[in-house]
Amino acid sequence: MDGQTDAGAGAGQQLEQQREGAEEEGRLWQGGQARSSLHLVSAVAQWVLLLACLIYLGVHFLRPSKTQSDKVLWTHIRYSGRSTRGAAVNLSAESGPIQIRNGSVLVPCDGLYLLSLRSTIYLDEKEEDWLNLTLQASSSVLWEQIVQSSESRVNLTTVLYLFEQDSITLWTSSNASLWDLSLSLVLVADSKS
Image 1 (cartoon, helix red, strand yellow):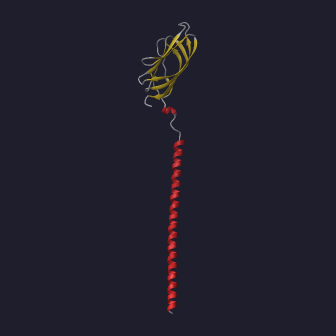
Image 2 (tube, rainbow, N blue to C red; image 1 turned 180 degrees about the vertical axis):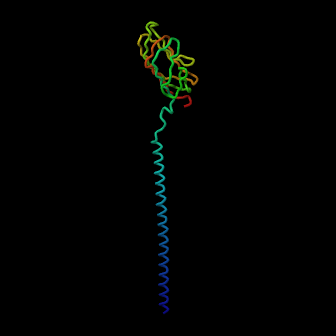
Image 3 (cartoon, helix red, strand yellow; image 1 turned 90 degrees about the vertical axis):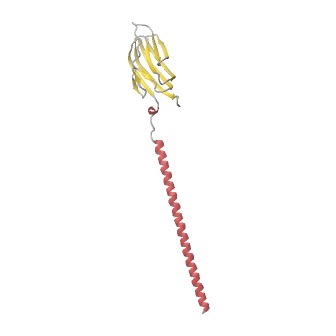
């Protein structure tokens, strides 16, 4: 009987060990499943954050940036009309952020500027047979051309270093008609860059 009791006790212990082993295995499985769930949640969160970052970067780089006209200082002037001997041509801006005051282009800052001037000039034949066309800064002559025929094309494209205090004015030495005058001034590089 003693043998049976020992065998029953041994079987009970074995069953108890199996049950404890099964519970331990269950806890390990649940712990592993919990870890797996945490890894899965973590991976999903990382992918969501990565996707959000990519969307943000895509929107940021695909968004239209400020137009060049917001970043670059420039002006464009169109003029057709009469010039008077010894008087500045009364220019006014057609477009662009650079200001025009009293017919003169005000240079907004020190720097390199691209300047373009084009026009057709008709001389008054009764007056004179030549005209001196002068583009002048506040204190110096930037460009000068003598026009000798009654119908002449003027075409100038140049790069100039201008100073903030300068104002650019167009002068004629005699009466003439200026047609389709186009003057453009664009800041290429300011002295600060």
